[in-house]
Image 1 (cartoon, helix red, strand yellow):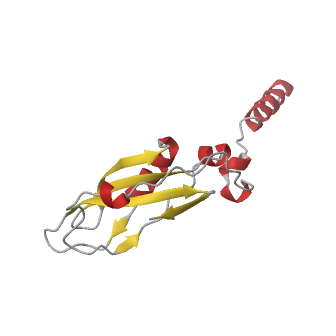
Image 2 (cartoon, helix red, strand yellow; image 1 turned 60 degrees about the vertical axis):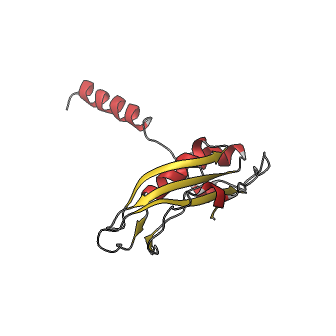
Length: 149
């Protein structure tokens, strides 16, 4: 191998080494450090008033998979707290569809995290021809933790 070719390979290897991504401390929840609140928890709404009166009625739901959202990195880093109310429909197969935010404070990344989580939910199949609309769930993002209400 020529010296020029060897040098070119070394330069390319050095350049590619600089492209390696190193996880930032905020990307791994285990290394985030303590949550430092910078804001008060916003006042909670009356969720019963937010839910449609005929929403999600007809059959009981049995969750097969319903993971909570991750506390958003930005919210954690900024010490923000909030809540998101999510509405969704459930198909006869138990799949979730039409996921939408009914209301959220302060919104933004909390709402996105809530929608992403609900989109992955799966319920046990419903009776033949059944379809539930307007199901409502509220997530609280409080002191670095997520709770469902």
